[in-house]
Image (cartoon, rainbow, N blue to C red; front, side):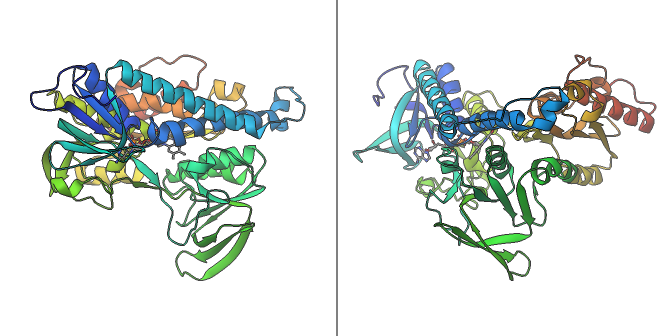
Length: 497
Ligand SMILES: Cc1cc2nc3c(=O)[nH]c(=O)nc-3n(C[C@H](O)[C@H](O)[C@H](O)COP(=O)(O)OP(=O)(O)OC[C@H]3O[C@@H](n4cnc5c(N)ncnc54)[C@H](O)[C@@H]3O)c2cc1C
C-alpha cells in the first residue's frame, strides 16, 4: 500500500509529486484532482478516511436532520390539517435513525476511499508530519514505525476538532460535542446546547423534533450571533421561540460538570456574576472548532501558526513571515477560512491547479453557507455590515431589497410561507454583493446567487433571467427585479450591465 515505486512516476528524485496530509474533504479533493492530472500522489490519514465531514459532520448530521424533519412534519397536526390530512400519532425508533446515519457514513466513506484508489492515489495509514522542506514522515498506525517520503509538493489538510472552552468537562456520555452527538446514542429528556451557531441550531432541530426539551446558551448578547440580524430575528421566531427551546443570550456556561444530572454554572457574560445553576440530563458543547496543527513539524519549515491556524494566501501557499514557503500548501479548516466542506474542497482544487502551473486564486466571497434546519438558513457574500463598510471605502451607495416567501405561490402551496431573502447590491453598477435567506430550501436557493457573485454579475442582467413557475426560485427572481428597479432609479442613464 505504501510502495512509492508503484503507479505513475514522480518528478525526478522524489517519492511523490504530491503528499497530502489528512483525508478530509480538502485532502480528498486535492489528492483526487492531482492524481487525475497525472501526478503521483499519496494521502496520509491517521483516523477515518473522509475526515470530519463524512464521519462526524455534514454527512451524519444531515442524515439525522432528514429523519428528524420527517418526524417534525408528521407530528405537526396543525400543518397537516391545513391540507386536510390527519395522520396517526407519529412513532420513531431512535436506534434506526442512528443506524441510518451510521450506514450513510459507511457508504460515503467506502465510496470516497474507492474513488481515491481508482484515481491511483496511495493511501498511507498513519500520522504525518513535516520533516523539513519537501519531506513528510509518517508514523504508521498500530506499529509506530516511521517512514520518510520525499515530495515535490506537500499539502496540509489536517482539519479541525471541536473546541471545548475551559471550565467545561466532557465525558462523552452526558457532556459531549458533535463528535458524539451524531451517534444519537440516547435522547435526553432535557439537553442544554452551548452555542447557537449552525451546529447548535442543527442539533436543536434534531433534538426538539425527537421530543427533547432544549435550553440554548449563548455567550454573546444575541442568539444566532453569526447570522444576518434580520434573518436571525425571523428564523429565531420559528426555530427557537416556536419550539421547546429556552434560549438565553449573554450568559456564559462557566463550569459544566458531567454526571446525572449534569450541573451547569451560568454567569453573566458582562459582569461574570453568577446567574443560575442548571441541572440537566445532557449538554452538547457546540462552541466552535479548533485547527489541528500541533505536532505537524511546521517549525521545521519556519512556519508559525496564528491561534493554531496555518497562514495561507489566496493561492493556498503556506506563509512564513508573510512570504510563501516553496512547495508547501494548506487547505481546509486548518486554514481557518470559512470552515466548511465545500470551501476545503475548493481550496484543495485551487492548490493543485497552482501546483500544476495553472495560476488560480480562491474567491471566498462567492462561497455559500447553509444551516440545514427546518426551514433552512443560507447566505453568500458580504454581510450587511461588511457591505456598508465597503460602500464607505469605495464611495458607492449600498442597495438592499427583501423578497418574502409569503408572496411565493410554491411556498404558499406547501403551507410554508415563513421566509425572507435579503439581497445586497451596489446601486451604481448593480453588482450583487451578498444574499441572506431564511425559508424552505434556502440552502438550494442560495446557489443561484453564489454563481452570480462568482461572476460579479449585475442585478440588471439577472433580473431578465426567466425562472420556472411556480418554484421557490421566484423568491430570488423577485429580489433581482426589485434590485434592478432600485439601480435604474438611482442610475437612469445606466444601460445593460
Ligand atoms: C456537526 C457538523 C456538521 C457539519 N455540517 C456541514 C455541512 O452541512 N456543510 C459543510 O460544508 N460543512 C459542514 N461541516 C464542516 C465540515 O465538516 C468541515 O468544514 C470539513 O470537514 C473540513 O474539511 P477538512 O478537509 O479541512 O478537514 P477534516 O474533515 O477535519 O479532515 C482532516 C483529516 O485530517 C486527518 N489528520 C489530522 N492530522 C493528521 C496527521 N497529522 N496525519 C494524518 N492525518 C491527519 C484527520 O484525522 C481528518 O480525517 C460540519 C461540521 C460538523 C462538526
